[in-house]
Length: 161
Image (cartoon, rainbow, N blue to C red; front, side, top):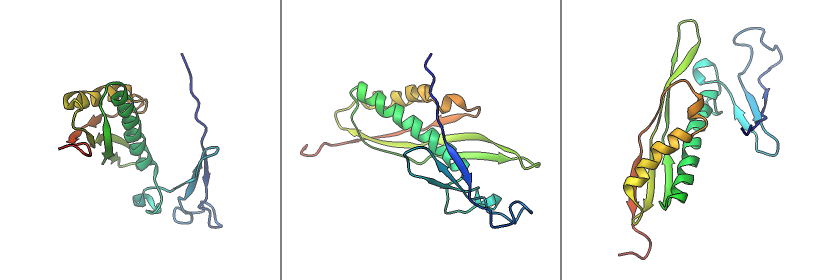
């Protein structure tokens, strides 16, 4: 079995001088880094005193699920003669917060809209979403349901009549 390792550094950047003296005395800002890659500016969800201009962990989790599914799907299309011209997902995650402040995701819905060439097999394009979901590393690692609701649009090739 192959093992893959992922090293990420997270640095809290929200100390305004008093540290965590009180709940309101610090910002939730942080940076996420991995060697040789651009830094990601993070914070908490604005509901938890976070900066709405920065990504929060919940958004990054939903984005990870969406990106993993997309990458598997594109691979499967490439090896199954389905030509994808455009792929866009409007993913939605639902997290429930408990009375004690804890919470958990209860569902993520991926809603990819995929444009394929007019001569690609539409039924196969739809079926490959199911296969991609079963292969997605991230979806296989979470304990909540991840639903995929794809829309396939066939587009005429340039120069076609």
